[in-house]
Figure 1: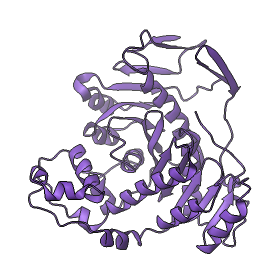
Figure 2 (figure 1 turned 180 degrees about the horizontal axis):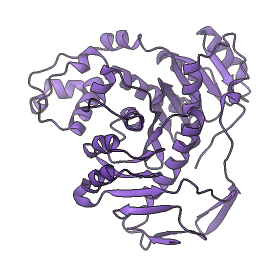
Figure 3 (figure 1 turned 90 degrees about the vertical axis):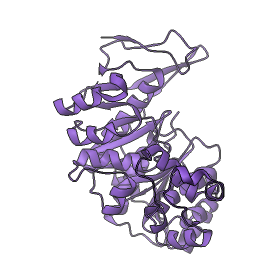
Figure 4 (figure 1 turned 45 degrees about the vertical axis):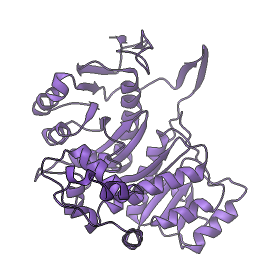
Length: 389
């Protein structure tokens, strides 16, 4: 098949819409009917997880929304706290399932209605977890018979399931049209490896093995995130992604706030929230974000909490949040381009960042290095810009 008709383009009024290739399309539709944005998510995400798999030698996954990852991760085991905040109910979960659970758990609010991207075969363990989540579709290189049966039952049988060809290699030049004008460029096939982390201008030059892995995860994630973008990573997964901001410090703040929320979800105050047993996962996620955030008074002072909790929770005070966030350490941070000022480092430090990778090349590199040295942060200059649009 060289051409595929789509439901519509970016919006329902944009019809007709299709995708086509001079050769065979590199994916097969096993179930459902794809939309324009579905395929943008699927094909961008596939590149991301394929590179993560190659860089770490671990199963990888991403959770995509609107052509940027809400999360990305590799298949490292979960402790009991993460199992609870990620809603893991199965006792035994596969490495591929763990990768997707981590990817979706980075920012569960943003992952609502995501496109799931898997580097390896979708097995029964992964499909069982996905069955209970609100998701628009999935792409993977293969599916076990059990997994395919489970996924075909989602969304009243309309869940989009794509099978990607592992052998597909695109042409070196890529093209797209904007307002009738065709753009052409060499595909960004630069390889991200530990070689990118060798130029370390800071006084602290010590990167742990875990930090190197997390920086590779963050850099590869940024390669497929709409720019400007910044990614915080820890323990084999993104924990905060700031995408598509015009100011880099706003990327750093946005991603840092998401990383803080990720860690605050692990606090005793959140873990012990008295949810009613029939509250659905998306409603729990919304309630937790409100409880942690600035709108908590609206939830607790009114009557809304009665629909969610068995009893009124105690307020999570700013002092308690600050005290808990002091425990967040060992975080890695990557940027898709240089940091122009030290204010980015100041913000990163507040979210436990101890390792940084960025391109370098700012006229204020000296200020950025000085700020890193102030907090004993190890920073590598990759000399690679990773803008993506």
